[in-house]
Length: 320
Ligand SMILES: [Zn+2]
View 1 (cartoon, rainbow, N blue to C red):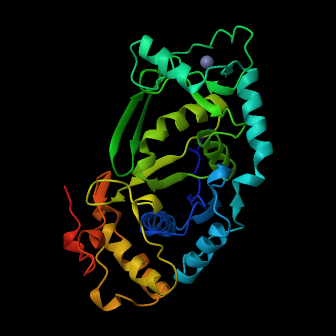
View 2 (view 1 turned 90 degrees about the vertical axis):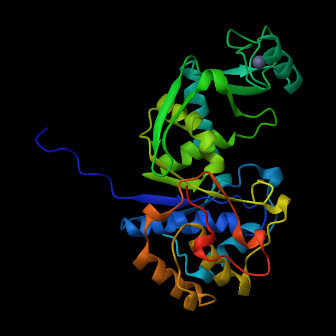
């Protein structure tokens, strides 16, 4: 070839799970992925990761869309719902089974625990019991072989990462015993179908990335690059979520939360814009976006929780 291929136009996405209203932690991922995409002149897509149906909360998806819209976080194209994509997951699973990359597993949770202990592996690491067949027992789940896979990648914020997948995770579930497709499989199939070039999300998912890269390779799909943002944690170090008491940030509280999310990401929104309408704040953020100022850390305390009587000033966000 005479010319190297032109780089693919940037396509990013935000993929919340509709398990509750938008909260500070998910807003950080939303605005971080939005600004990465807009700074690259690229598209920002929206997907509802509603594959884990028992955890979905009725009305949560619409609430999240309303909150994003209210802040001026406008996405490109139609919203994709994972629950509409089951055919694509079925096809991917079929391909992996057919090529022998995946196999049915008959083990219960208790059996996996006992087997990993007996094999001297880290807790929960599957020792490959059913790789050679289930011995006539009915398959419960489907697992992807990891044989010897060592995955390395360079995160756009956190730098070089690597994992010995077989030792750290073992053959992992891609269809669950309850019949649902595993998150890992669904995300890879969806991101590939949408042509996502960079995945920007919270670093709570950093540990999932080697499994997803392994899936891209087994499925022969082009891999995106990765950019894991710091996640907001409570003073005790727990991820901010509905379970740890994260407040919903919809309605009138949303612009204030957006200001704090920008400060959390190391941007320095002017105090004068505090409480300004979302679109105005976003316009400032797009004009002043500096990814080099994002703290290169996996987790940071949510400053507003450390001292709820006042909100975060940028200098209160720690940097290494
Ligand atoms: Zn098994």
